Length: 105
Image 1 (cartoon, rainbow, N blue to C red):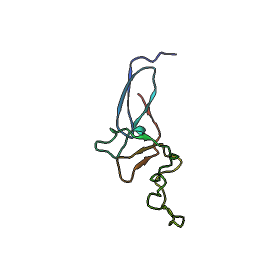
Image 2: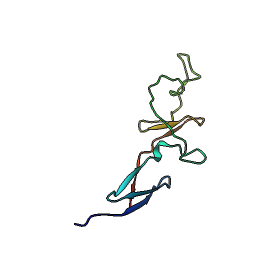
Image 3: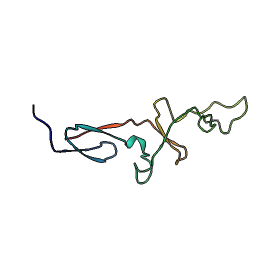
Image 4: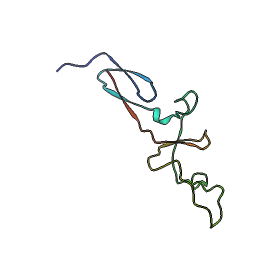
């Protein structure tokens, strides 16, 4: 068996970030899922970890409805797979991106 030596390179397919590592690494995890892709320039502003149980009326889309006979709520932009949120947008951007494995060659 031969030892892997030298340097390896790879590019994230989502954000385009380049990775350089020493062998024997075969892959790395890109952290672009933690950054907002809608900002200008993209992938530069970190997002907040999403926690839906903070009792904030805006989170539950009930900010204008305080009565018992409220209208049906509109569908929320987030779901169970939502990991991060960027509150710099109106409405907030909910991201369900997962870490991306970058293959190094």
